[in-house]
Length: 252
Length: 376
Ligand SMILES: [Zn+2]
Figure 1 (tube, each protein chain N blue to C red):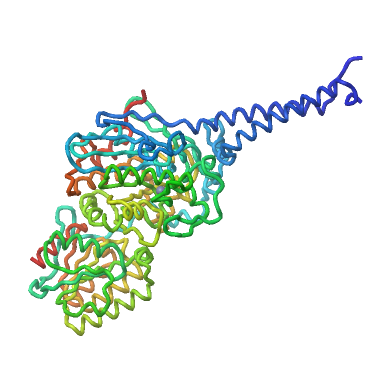
Figure 2 (figure 1 turned 120 degrees about the vertical axis):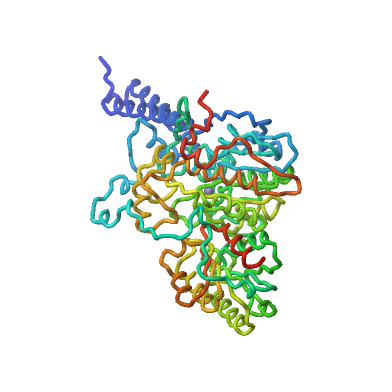
């Protein structure tokens, strides 16, 4: 066997040296993050898709596609637009809404903070307390409630849905007992519609004397239908900032 | 007697040589990740400093990063814009670069950090098949930009603990968040590498008395907080006013920074400094879980039939048209809001006004490349 002569010895040594160098290189490469290097090589222009997302790279052409056409969008006809920013259906009796005014939230979305920003600009005296309890209602004459709910908002505030619903119910009871005027505000738009929001909306609508609504949330006609059926004035606004105009008309 | 090299030794040698070549080539490709894209400061830039000027311990590390200062020379308030907190969210970096190359403030001082987590630009996320670069056409030529990782390069900070304990609150998160800059605020002088970067940024905000800090991000279109401004409670009013200014051109919401989620810029910078802390999110398909082939085009055009389909099924939190949500549109959202944060801010230190910025429609119509310098 050649292995036993000096030539084989030399060969073995060379291989050992080569292996050492390879190991060394491998270590250098690894220390820079072996995983990343693998990922990146896949994406250099020369190396064609070793797709790490194979499912996505080969689209299915099953029946699923036929169910959805991205070009068909469900639109509803709005009454407001960029030029006609506020549309009020019915007449708001502004004499009903007297101070002291309480602004709160049902559902802990940031819409109540938006009402805070609005009221500041309108320039009337009011109290802002998004988490006011039922015992904090007495003494006020008017309550403005932001009804857009957000699970994120509840989570952020560390309040459970059940607790928030219970608080809302208790407040509405006090509102009725103390005869407060209620303005129902849904100004967060379509993204603030959903089962949870609707629970709060229904609770507030039943005692409201006026509705302020960012119109894109009315895609199913929920608010305008209710207003019509109960003969309530409703102010439709095109964008959140138009709340300022509506509130200025109501409170100034 | 003639000596013959046995076949198996021959084969082994060839294989070894091939491995060496492979390793050398891979190492070369891989080391390219450490090269940063060129940025060409525009007329508005009055000074370029390093973050280590505010926190010397960062000097010489991969965490040190450029701070571009655009001083109008007119007394006013100051704003800090952070791009590249997460280098796999390109709209943040590109917006910052556009501000550096194009903006000329008319009052106040603008600080821009395009690569907030510089280390995270030097690698990509494992198993994401992310491109190392993406390409944007300017009026005269194509420029490249680095696509990085969400987290600090493991070569700068390793290993991750099983559980990441946020230092000042004791909040426990998954160990993978240990290298996430946006879970490290307000940072620690003697903390881990990422906490040191966060500490440096907090130091800058404190010492320069920055009135407004905007941390620019992107999120996957299926994520719940997207197309949104997240605001610390002190900054909610400013965020709401800004929403009024931009809501006619874009769908956007304001979200309150959760008081019980720690380590994020909009929580900790607002709590530990006087700055109004804001964070913005746009929809980035290349970051999501549903996209198809991952390449520069996906990053730049945002065009992805799977996202468009997912939108049709109502699975997304944003409108996802067949034309995609382009990087231009995402940057237009960021730029427009940054500009309006300034225009709506009425601080005691005076106004801050960002001049020479294109409008939302101009950026979308002409593309972000038109508002970047040509490659030099
Ligand atoms: Zn991010």
